[in-house]
Amino acid sequence: METFMETGENTLAPVDAITESIKVMMATKISKDGGGREVSLATIPGHYSGYDGYVFEQGHAKVAKKNYI
Image 1 (spheres, rainbow, N blue to C red):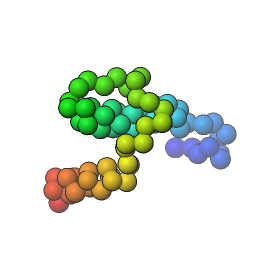
Image 2 (cartoon, rainbow, N blue to C red; image 1 turned 90 degrees about the horizontal axis):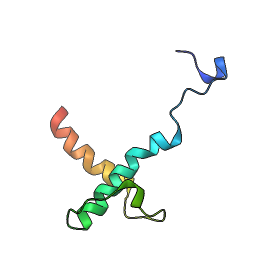
Image 3 (cartoon, one colour; image 1 turned 120 degrees about the vertical axis):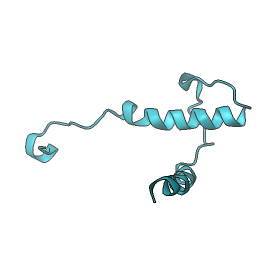
Image 4 (cartoon, rainbow, N blue to C red; image 1 turned 90 degrees about the vertical axis):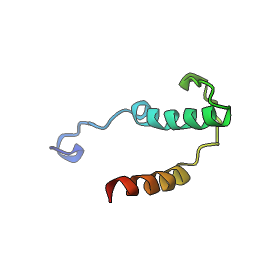
């Protein structure tokens, strides 16, 4: 695979594609906090700060460890 430095072509996913998974995680948190109601990704407030990626990763690591070790 050639790199950006070699070709000058950006082959990375666009930011909106990368952040989509974060929006899904935020919607999950909002839904859980709201009693399980359905949450559209389009309705997540731009200022929403209820999602802590580090805390999520730590919890995920504990669960994943049980599955992979």
